[in-house]
Image 1 (cartoon, one colour):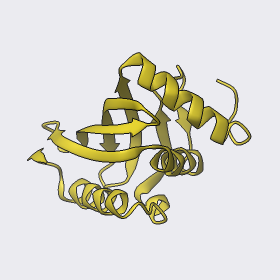
Image 2: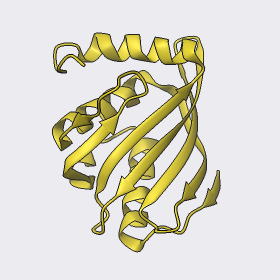
Image 3: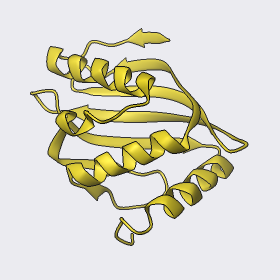
Length: 141
């Protein structure tokens, strides 16, 4: 994986822990990395989902949905508080190419997690699977 990061130390530590948890397919410690008011910005809905419990639920679910998930490149913004992670994965027979844009606060907690995915057919497959798994837990958007 290409790494071009110059994150602030607390953000870098959080991102390192994120990568370890994803590699282990175990996000049980994710709540400790999320700010209470964290937001998740889905590629499938207009409004963000707010609050650490909701963000935790979404990210744990998507980790179960994705197959063959792998990060390839990482970039940071000059302020050291934002990272962009390029990934590839599969949902069923659909190949996904996307990015995670993660914003951290000064203490290294994740405050914003935004995802962009292509192609449209893969996004539709992901949205359908996520919707079926989370419908009972999520407010309508």
